[in-house]
Image (cartoon, rainbow, N blue to C red; front, side, top):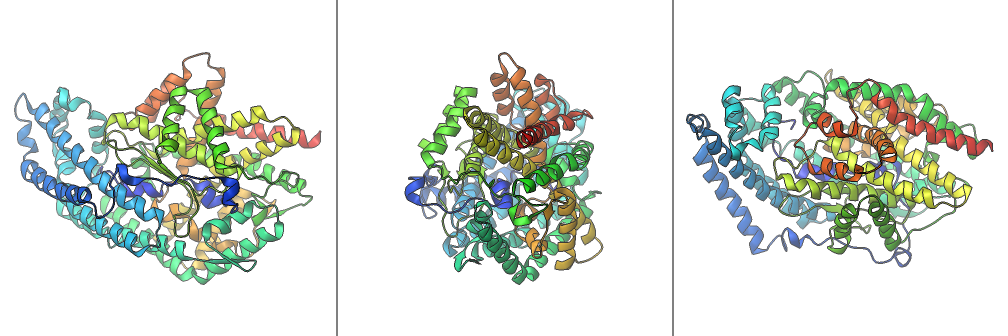
Length: 627
């Protein structure tokens, strides 16, 4: 992780969420009678309640087990390796550490999910904060372990990894070793760890609770952030404009707060990076993602080079459909003029996604069905509920949970397919255990985007009318642009912010200008960035919770485009190989995982292959327009 020590940051995973609803606008509120009954998750598989005896007992057990682990192993790892049984002895230590990680992750996940379900509830917020403090204290006792593991000689560790109890953990130990140059001494690590709850963690919480509490006046109606963003997908252009103005007004009123949060967290990261020795502002994220900086830069350059051929070209085409030379920014994701307004009920959405999964792999569909049948999904929109969508893996001894804000639009169906892709991946990877199950973000987005592609292809195959096919193609192209072009623009924006912050604090106006610069470059001349848009950086949660996360979406989209092309040409066995890739979790590097499919993300032309898929879809839309 970015701390320089590999720990399982379960609560951070809450914010590695689906961006399309948070960034493109989600979906307009619909009549519950039309949507049908939707599930709310049952967290009882973790704990019955915050006051349950089981929860209290587990928290106390975690404290005691951490103390026992510390007293048993601190300062003694080198001695464990002094004899022929050193590998097995060290393996038992790693197993005990892993067991503790599962227990701590279960506790953290429960508190985090309760909080996400209603961030406005003071009791949930207090419980979440108290649990974070308790886990931080417990985690401090465990900091010595990865530090001492990295203190062992490489030859000694290599010999130990030949032992049966330890050799399965070699990928985890190898990743831990990569963090060694950025580790600090134990006392400093403890300080960083303990201060995180009053530092980065506190600012994250302030952002969450502030954003949830904001209300936006749209045509006389007070809306929260989610339904306000939803207005961008309505047919009524006036409604879209009013929503845009409401967002701009409220963001401007709160600009000082969001500017302070951004400056503080950027400086906090700079301090941590400087002490640890990271040279580049995104270097810690690349380490977390187990991806080489050169691979990321090749992706960024390929996407930026494709801006004119993809986003600039598509938005010019879309403007022509609206009879305009330019579209205002609030019209960027508007439905096509001839596209019928539709509300897709929950049962229809469920059947659509499960059928697409079933055609690809019955096993994949069976796993996904559990999320519906066993109440692992929280779907309805509620006041205070965390916006957007995510799939939280929790821990291997339990199962993932999915949060949605489902409101019946076609993009909601794709979001459901996306998050179920994550969920299936997380269930399969759980076989690896707590230390090896977590997947780097770049590969974690592969399964989710692949799930979307399966669903899109199924819907496209069922489209009978040219207008229906055009609407589906346009929607998919827009999703791809939002996943590739927009995320690389966001990555460029973050780099500019963090680099500029090293020279001093930034004003809200300076941040806004950097935002406008990268948006204008990526969206092109067919999108008019009207007044107020300069504040839209304020509400992007990834900038706050997971700096430089965003390129993982582009990585996953381009990778899946190439992967799906292999699938379409494959005769048999692709689904089995694909599920094996998901089962690997974090136990293999991206190069090793993609090798069975004949793909290599480090190859110069790899990203162009994925981008060409988007270009071909735009070609088809242009041909439909001409004809």
